[in-house]
Amino acid sequence: MRPAMLVVSLLATGLALAACAAPETARTAMTDRALGQTRYAIALHGGAGTIPKDTPAEKVAGYTEALAAALRLGESKLRAGERAADVAQAVVMALEDDPRFNAGRGAVFTSAGTNELDAAIMDGRTLRAGAVAGVSTVKNPIALARAVMDRTAHVMLAGAGAEALASEVGLERVEPGYFRTEERWEQLQRTKQRLAASAAADPMLDEFRSTVGCVVLDTHGDLAAATSTGGTTNKRPGRIGDTPIIGAGTYAANDACAVSGTGLGEQFIRHGVARDIADRVRYRGFTLSAAADQVVHGVLDANDGGVVAVSGTGEIAMPFNTAGMFRAAADWTGRFEVAIWDLPQPLPAKP
Ligand code: ASP
Image (tube, rainbow, N blue to C red; front, side, top):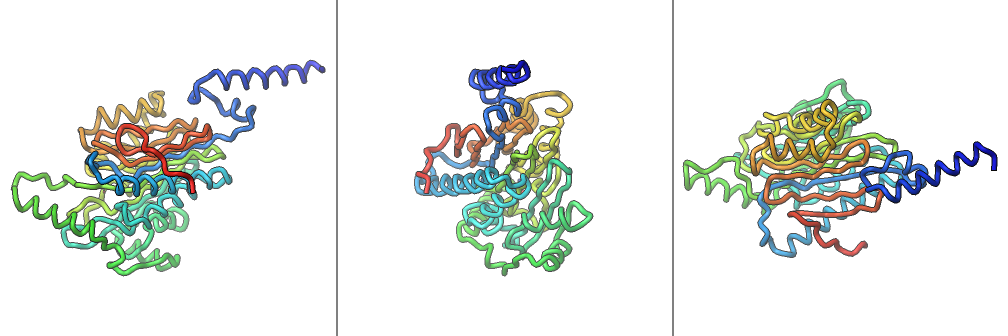
């Protein structure tokens, strides 16, 4: 064997051995390549909140299956080499169309009995971002956020101006009745009754938050984040939460991480949660898990919410400080899990 070949062969063997011995998180892009693997990671959430542990098994199974299906969709797109922003958008759109989640079809109601939806998407490679706030006739607000990112010189459009863009680019529109689900309507009635019964009742306490979001590291090494929500039950018309605020509920930058948040939006805005996590990674050198834990458990108050986040090395973090958070994660090492409370949920059989 020629010396150069020997070096290459020893290097490859060394890399392969190192990859086998090292924990998954310590593997590098170089060892992945030596093993013929392409690194990717994806995490998504369907909201953080109270989620009682005695939630009927059928309902839990429905959420688990919906999250697993969205994860499968995202993972198959990543394996096909699709770009991070396209994958995050597709996953969020699927969850927007599912009436179980408080985004798109299953949006919660304002105090006036209307639906006002917010969404945002961010591309970590270019730092381009698009967001919409307070839209009420667009079937998939995340697609409109994408149009803001790709087709305007702006980052955020609200209300009528955002809807005018939806007309311009030909996005699907719906009548207000499309967003009316009985479960969310009853949730509004219960909230109004609770507030009427006691002047001390917390107006922001929400029973079943289920905003959706997705963060992605694609096989090209790029990050993206996307989040979509109906907001909080009984919110004042015109209220805008953290979801469409870049740096609060949504953020992605290749030199740090991608983050999508869920919870009490006002708190996420006050603390700039997504950007704070990214800055702890970027400027203070914390691992993604450490940074996300510090912010969710040390900066936010108990019961404020949680995040899903992914780093450029494929590290995934999904901390929350509520009783539960609908979440799911997959990566190039074969990880594929769905969880609601502390432990992963038993997965439904693959179709
Ligand atoms: N963060 C969203 C908002 O405040 C709500 C949620 O995540 O459930 O609008």
